[in-house]
Each structure stands twice: as C-alpha cells, then as structure tokens.
Length: 394
Image (cartoon, rainbow, N blue to C red; front, side):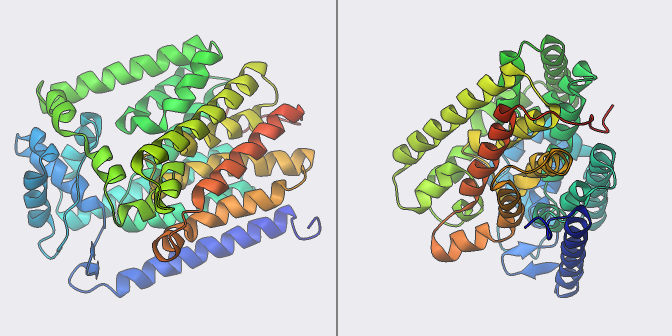
C-alpha cells in the first residue's frame, strides 16, 4: 500500500470524490419537481424544521416549536408541498440563530444557510490542514454533501469542534468558547468537556462555561424567559426517536442504533451503548492525562464524539473529518502503524454507505468504523509518536 498511499494520490482521490459529490448535488437539484426531491423529502430536507422554528420565534411564540402540532403547521406554511413533518428538539440557543434566518423567503434562507456553513467548513479546514490531503479529505467527506443537500448543521458542529481542539494548545480560552458553543447540540460536546476536566485544563473549561452561560442567557433574552421551560417540558424528542421503531434508526450512527437494528430491546441497546461509551472514555482520559504528541491527542478526542451519545445522526459524522485529517497528517509525517491507512479509508468511506446498508440489510456498520477510528487514534497516542511540527492553527 506504500506506493499507492502517497500524499499526491490521496489528495487526487479525495478531490475526485469531492467533485463527484458536487455533480451528485447538482443532479439531485435538477431532478427536483415542485420543490420536492422525492415524495418524502422537500427542497432543503431537514431545513424546513429549522425554518419553521425560526418562523415561530419571529411570530412571538418560540415555545410552539416544541409542540408537534404547531411545528407541523409552521412547516406546512414554509413548504406546502411537503407531505411529511419533522420534530424540532434543539435547545433555545439554536432557535436564536434561526430567528433572523426566517426573515428571508424559504428558498433564500436555505441557500444562505447552506452557503455560509459550507464556506465555514472550507475556511476552518483550510487553515487547520493547509493544502494537504487532509484538507481535500475534509471536502470529499460524504457528510459535506449530506449536510448541504438537507440543510443540516453538522458542518457547524464540526467547525466548532475543530476550532476548539486545534486551538487548545495555543489559545485555551478561545478553544473553550468554541467547545462551549456546542451547547446548541450538547451531546456532541460532552466527551470533549469531560476530557478538559480530566486534564485540568481550567482556562478552556472557563471559556466553555462562559460560552454556555452567555449563549443560554442570550437565548432567554431574545426568545423570552419561558423558552427554556418549554424546552425542558416538551423537548424530549430524542427519546421518541431513539425508542421508536422505523426509519430514523437507519440514519443514527451510534452503537445504540447498531444494537437496536439487530433486534435487541431498548434497555439492552442502552446498556451496551453505555458500556462502549464508558470504555471509550476510560481509555481516552488515561491517554489525555498522559499528554504526548498534539495531532494524535486531537484525533483521539474528536473520535470519542460519535461513540458517547446514543443520539448521533449521520449528518453529525462531519466531525470525523478532524480525526481522519489529523491522523493523515501525522501518518505522512511520522510513518504508519499497521492497519492505520486501511482504518482511515474505511472510516472516511463508510458514512456514504452506512444509512442505506442499515435500511436494506438491517446492519448499521458506522459505529464499527467509529470504534476502529478511535482505537487507532488511541493506539497512536499510546505509542508516543512525536509530531515533527505543529498544526497550522496557531
């Protein structure tokens, strides 16, 4: 594999995949009829729920976003052609962002949202990785196509995680602010927050705490003091999705979904997921407290994210561009461990096929790829390989 896995060839392959996804995106849009991509998927996909929540906030009733009847009615006004309804279960911090966006017509709001997040994705990983195969792998990740097509927010989550972990060694307070901003989707920041606490990185912890407090207070000021009570009382949508039957499990990329798709009851799935999450965090904390080379530690910390929360959708897999990119750079600099290149290739490619495989074969393989990616990053940390230089995020 040495002759095939060169920087030039990896970059060329990733560029080709990125172009293929661009062409697929264009083809999908040109096949659209009456703003419907398919009978069950409208233009912007999941974005219709975001837009509807923003509409309700602009109408002075943001709490209604957590009521299924009210959000369904708002979605029908936003995209009357749609024959489906989507639940909204985000904390008020996210609705605060959506409120101004809903001031635009639906189509333009989607275009602005998708364009801004894609531009953020490009900017963050260009600065972090430079003109390397890691940058092109970040652009060729299937989660990019998925997020842009469906108007999702995974690129925002990945950018915040990337800014946080890549700034941690040089600007810990800024890093904490970025990680704290993940409170709009708190399940994604949980494992990294625990690592910061375990490592005694108090400036970063302080930045994260300040970020959470300011964003939560700002959301109460913008949306009204009752919004958080409504979220707590009516925002238990994650359990409805996880514990129900049917399609959503195909798009959930956690160990919990893997076990449920194999036919296990809910309690068994939660138990097995919890055991894996606990094992991952015990290993990660041990390696994190030891210190060591920067890139493997960043990769390991980011690789914990898909394995801790049972509520982890395929569009959130945008976060794996960080561990894959960090390990690519580290591998080209310092040499490859056995199986490392194969695991990186599998982890990068699997998100493109995992949802369809889960739907048609009843097997959700993405958690297996996530476990392999974490294991490789952890082994890299334990090996004590020293980086020959720092990341470009300085």
